[in-house]
Image (cartoon, rainbow, N blue to C red; front, top):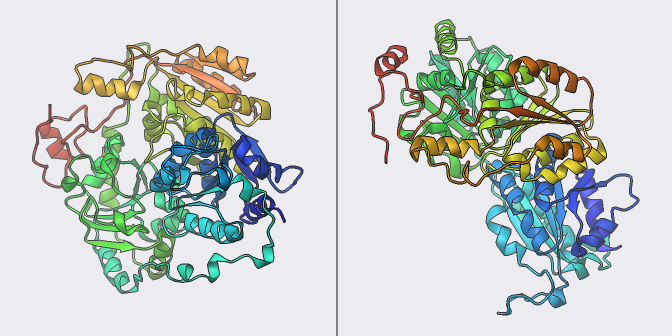
Length: 590
């Protein structure tokens, strides 16, 4: 059979029914192999970066694998940001690029290029993938495909890339004669995860003795499909839960144990809860600086700390742990839950009352003018009227933090973020991938006026396919996250965030694409518009007018522990509400 037909057959067998692509000459054979098939469809985006982001979201929602394709040269390079996003956020995706014929490829020749659009994408992409391979032998295609998908989904998941030259794509092969990766010595030598049975008693003892425990749920809970086991752990122990940005949808926010998001832009009450705990169980979170602040030595400094992660390199890398275990989150939770079936819950009434006090005293609100829309309150309105099962796709910027702080996720809702890469332009294509993976669900895009312009061309795909996506743009007429940073540290010199930045009339652009458009100028008008838009499954675009100076509050500044956020509480008040000693003050570098 033709090799390109074999590749498509293989993809279908992985449970993948859609390929995100932007056509080019070097992948025509592969795309032609999808033609007239009823078990796989091509989703033709308008930019390869969007295709990569869509594949990422598709994988997150279908829980298996996402696939994106691009042509050689500029097409392949345009996918790199999306490939990196999958790498940093542990998403299993297979990226396939076309390449010039092997007889046109330069290999080790010192010339820069021989074939048109020839680019060594494998060398470029290797630092952002778990595995990348140029296929030069058609008889190895089964081996490479099996290895790629296995690597993408095993251990800490991530992206893989196969670069397939055109003459390899059109080659004839005998499928039954192809070598399998799973028969190889390479497969047999892959390292297994850590046995934790000898640590279970110690963990149960720490859990039993905790008076102020906290579970910190990271993105790894979702990556390992362990939300059910997390719920079971919470039911077994009664422990309260805080999350990282990537772990926000690990637990529904109406659960009484949910406390909020921690970190640099976390809820003040969530940071206070974590700062004062005596035991923190870190599940699938790498504890990056956006969670710990710039003083990781002060992070949960009064607590016993346990970290569970599939990636050994993340254990103890930033915060010293009392126990650090390299194991899959789901496997860990299943084992610990089995031991806790007859667990006598510790009375945590006083601890929950303390957390409730923090919530009442320090609600999350951002400072705005007398006539401005308070964005955290606005997020509360959207979340109230959102539907069970909605997939919320956040772009990167201030709006992302407002949503992370104040969007109350319901059961079966998902929240997709670009975490490690932090890529503006993520949300719109992510929503396309999400509803493609699950056509029965709706998506809500929450973006800023800066981020929405980066992949705005995908409005055409949303309109032409009538995808059930509502796009909400919080428009403050600037690049607000960096502008806030400039106001704080650079004396209000707003170069390139206000000075030099501009935004067109987004309503007219959405209307030109054929999408119904609305504008919100006040909280009073918000409910009317949102209820109207959410009543059906049609594309819609909402422009929310904010003041330019709208900020994200609270915010952690440099050299402060996570409980000491800006706007700062006076030292006496902070001391009164803390259950442990205050951290030593350190000056902010100029």
